[in-house]
Length: 212
Ligand code: C5P
Image (cartoon, rainbow, N blue to C red; front, side, top):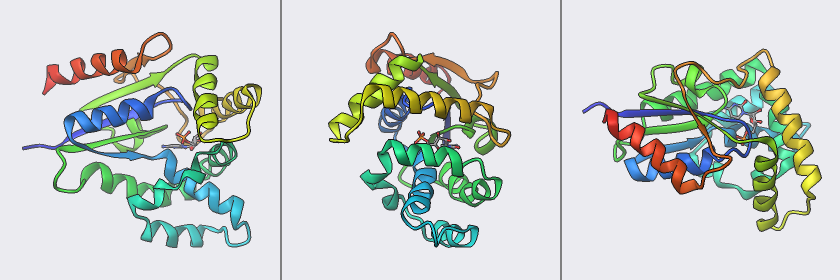
């Protein structure tokens, strides 16, 4: 039986991670939050600036395991902002490419397939995905969600700081030359602004069940 591939692109804090996890659990798919890879690299740049080089990141990527991505330090806004800086680097994106391809096309055997979320998943990493979604929400809603999330992790931030950094990240992710964030024509738009997590997931599930 053919494995299912789900590709999701979305701006920061739109609820893509939440939906991707629900999808992966329900359909038994291997989930990869690709933003975490860029965050891990950004964290190296912030904490070990002297060691940061393409060669060093190449070595890190060779040894990378899914468990390395579960570090809660990676969630901070500072790391997110740095991730949107280092991810503009074509060479860095190339180094991250192989890990994503393997996760998408060769997930561990026990899964029925894979689900990846990021910025260029629908058109660069899995252009032949069985399902493509563009998940978004208005800027204030996303900032409020991220603010609450950071607060629950006991991070010291104000709402205005979070709003500012979300706007900055949007600007950089949508306008960059390399792998810009965009909704492809063949992606289904899911706007989570006015809907609960559950309602959004029901819609996604319905769309997927029609084709499965
Ligand atoms: O999704 P998340 O907010 O964790 O991503 C952090 C940053 O990493 C994004 O703002 C984006 O610049 C970059 N990124 C990317 N391509 C991806 C995933 C994330 O360029 N596939």
